[in-house]
Image (cartoon, helix red, strand yellow):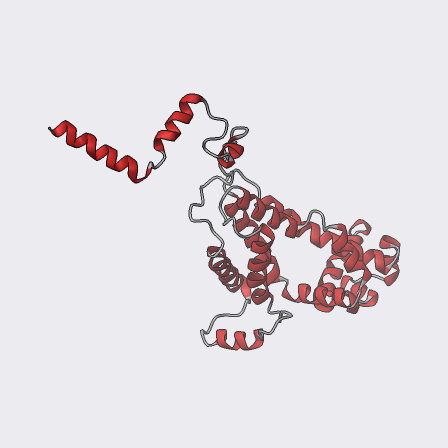
Length: 280
């Protein structure tokens, strides 16, 4: 039975999402999408005008749904670290479920696919990365993190250690994740297949986050980030410290200073004679 005409655009989008997941933007074919949706290729042009607009609609639709879920889970009145954990858990789950999609999108970016680059630039000011970074910055301001490191240092050191292993992507530095994965397989950890295994992968990513986080936490997480203001020094106090002790003194002050001066051996002899006279 043919789909109602008003549902054809949704059928094309659902088919396009599946093709995008498997093949990425570079491998996406209008004929394959339409064949999966069970419609004529002319229908795609009718609803979306061109393949480029169809691809952009797919990317924007998928990303907005993901970003909205991250934002909703990152709200609340609790601590920024707890909100960061909730948002990060959503990011991990989507990343693990969509490993193939993300790897294809990364390849598309390196292949200069304009639609992917434009989508990333369009959402750069308010995307999931910005949400996560803002929470790190808020936690830093409120004293949860050490003050000898910046929020950007914390973010850029923690996040790759959480997501690169989860996505199984070799990073551009001299550590071979293939060898690390071979070591991890000795623990007989399950691959992410099925809801239970995906949940286990998410928990493994969260454990990596907590381990990396420990190195940046302040000794007193509840401490305020506002430093105690320095008490302003009275005007001229620095000048007074540099002025000689007998300069500009009053008469009484000068007498006290003269009395404090060492008086030589003559004074000592005279003082001893006076003591002898008193003894007699």
